[in-house]
Image (tube, rainbow, N blue to C red; front, side, top):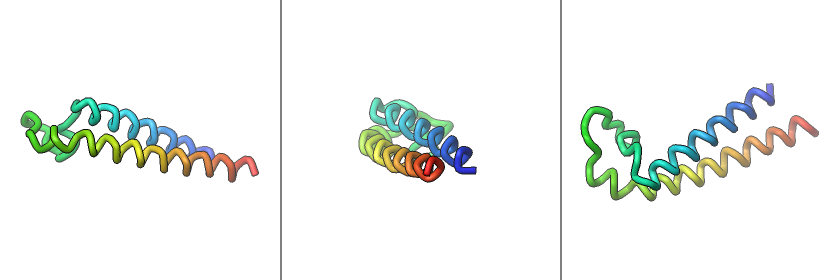
Length: 75
């Protein structure tokens, strides 16, 4: 069971890293506010780098949790 949890966490961390990278480059801005039908707004472009940093920090926490579950599995 811990293997499945670890695999899920690693996939989730990869997605957070990818989305954080795209936000830092001011791409995929429609995901920030859920605005899927119109062009991105100026507010979304202004806050995108900060949201990207937050996504990277969350990715680090998720990776730490995944490595802890690996540690528990191998213990």
